[in-house]
Length: 159
Image (tube, rainbow, N blue to C red):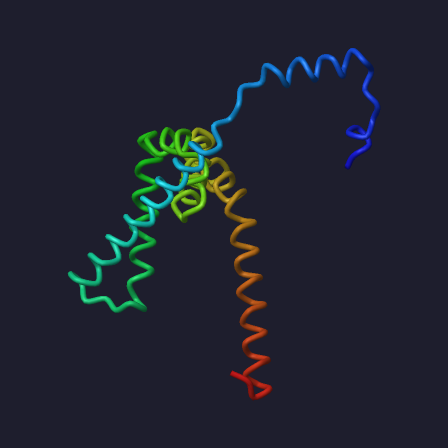
């Protein structure tokens, strides 16, 4: 804990904190969890429908259907973000929209849309990748570590 949290509060400060805590609205935890579950699950069901569509109509295999499915989900998310619909859904559903890949696409598209008046390079590109940069960096690093471990195990005669 920081020193500010350990600091002794004066009686007036303690009284105010008790007063504020009494009047703070209760958060509907069960309802918020249900909304997040339903919307996040709905996004996953949509992904499964898209995946099945590609499997049945375009002769993809179970190994190759993932990339186009994710691409379509990202495209849908970006379109809904640009229309302002995804933000309203995210406001209502909370974490249910943030966890799937669509939430990441929404955050990238939102940053790009918000800063488009600053130009394509410094506005859209620069601000869009402020968030994506760290995610991409850690993703590439994690992939490197996993590949290194797998190569080491294979070299030692393991799986």
